[in-house]
Image (cartoon, rainbow, N blue to C red; front, side, top):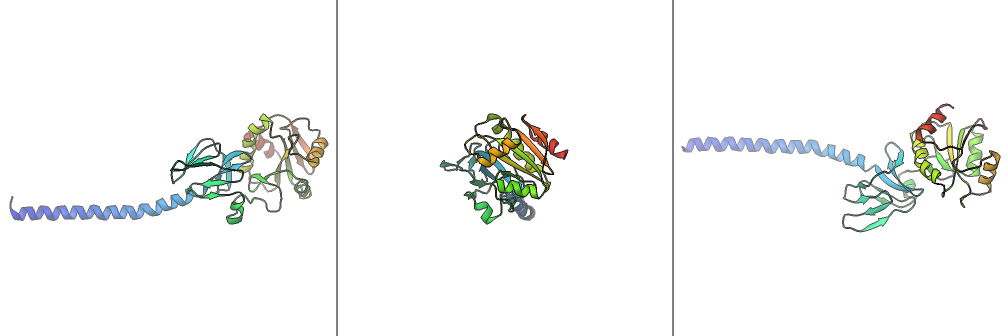
Length: 246
């Protein structure tokens, strides 16, 4: 092969190689911001132990839903549906009530979310523990909050619950999901512990007032008056359907 031909071939190969390098750099420059945005969005997804059940928290949309399958975080950590967290090095721990771990690997103790980022602080005017909902809160019952809701003429859903009741426990993710999807400020829901060791005289008096005979009974009040009493079990759609009628 002549030296001139060899030189031409080398020049062509150099140009091709330079073009590929520039294309790769350009593609990387475009891809990195996209990857960074996606990572930031994923960091807003967390997994929290709430009322003995693992919940998926979406901080961006302010929603919460039941965790149905194990998930792997960005750093390789596995989060199980029973709250067990297994890190990449094999070490593990169990999330306690109120504790959470996020897609970027951040761990938060109970109460840290409200102090640092406002997560979980749904209705500052009410003092009961927030269980679900943002615009439409679902809280643990207490007499003060209930009285406030009556004065504000809110539509009130009372859900009589016991921690030992299998129907109540099966229904709990349904009511959480329903309230998380609601966007009505004229409605508030209360989970009323009754006959499970966590109730009090206010809950007992409330059950007596409405003639509640069994757990998982739902009472709905409008204008302070009872408009519905249902002892049967509801799924998410039933909650939404009954509330939509009001």
